[in-house]
Length: 104
Image (cartoon, rainbow, N blue to C red; front, side):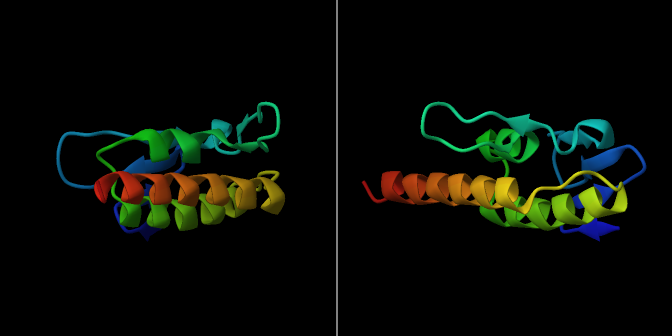
């Protein structure tokens, strides 16, 4: 199954877009969580790692979000909607921060 430039394989989620960049989320680590610090909530580690990659566009990350949910279900993993909501909120906050920086 493919979502944009992301392929769901037996090994996990793999970037298949143009260029030399590589990104792969192993199926065994897909729902790894990044603990929140102080007042920040727990998020999904791999979505946040991808969000930190400057070469991935917002559209690429939106596609990854869909691929992530699909893959979690396909692999029968313990997916938390609360953690995913926290992850998306943090991701969108970062998008807004980047947009604010571009305005200056």
